[in-house]
Length: 530
Image (cartoon, rainbow, N blue to C red; front, side):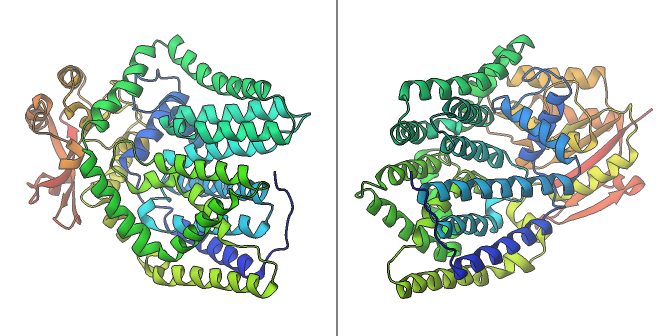
């Protein structure tokens, strides 16, 4: 393992500092943007988990149970307000930067490559389409994968038990956050073999401690679910439901169109200066395979790169935030673009060229990075989703709510429950799940109707939006056909957001909210008649 360090190049340091300041400035601009439905789901489930509700019984999500623990602890540490949550994300990303720096430095022994890798990670995160500002599970997942690699780097003959166990625990947590951890098994196994060779350790013992750490984390959370009576439900939501919801809905041909569009419109058109560094870094990695001293690290890094790229493929949707799991590997490979020539003139020329590429990247996207209003960027990213319009309605609801009041959201925006700190007494917080055709659709819809009939909540938020309702051609309409009559018979509108075709809301409150909406997309807050 290469551990030598070289002096920092001024241009590389300057690029790192400029990008770092830009990155922090950009994140501070996005502190108050609304939560989306994914963020709302994870925060709500984390809130429930920490407070003792039974996972997959009292609430559910299609991720493993580690995501509930991580989000619950995250909220306890950083707080529940939008500002504090987004500051927490900034801290998480800075911790990821530290992991990238440590891994690069240990792999290549070059502080310039380490700083360059971190700068590249940050500059990609500046671009809003990756949604790096969001409180998203990809941040936590890839951090724990990197943390596992970091602990493995710490393994020595006299400390291998402790650090291989820590590394296993970290990967186990990653696996309990997202199922995508499977894509990193091969590069991490090869890394274990490499460590055993370089540190002259017993490979079998190293693997045993590493696997034991994985199993401690996975079995502890699974045993907790078993003891709470939710194991069967966990199996359904973690393994069966994702195949119903995602894997069978997008064809390979459609997926390749999504992938091609993203690669062309986001990576190529908006980041071509950084892609030059990636191309050079990949060539350097392949070149290093032919040198004995660097062969192992080059192969491990390339396999890590391939595994990270594979994480964006499940479901074939290639959403922007999926790529957050790929960016650290991209940054580590691209850091190799700082080539170590013997000639100082050539070495400084390479550094200057890298500096020019960073300046080009920053200037060509300066409007998005520094000038465009974050709310405009947010609305452009989320299109017809109601997240932005919902924020003001939720704020109004929070002012009206009493501690004993209950709420129900007809829609797929669990962030309302989280931001009002209300736990629904049935697990169906996501109307969109109930409308995806499955063997349980009728049961869930009838359970929801029964709950609303028997215990009408004080407030009901109706989100009339095709994305939120998620109605399909073969969906059951039992709940949808029933809800309108239930609302008109038992409730009075007290707030409304009428959302036009440009996704711009017009708000009405109190008596004005009783007007009929002019648009097909709207949000109505109802109060129970007494």
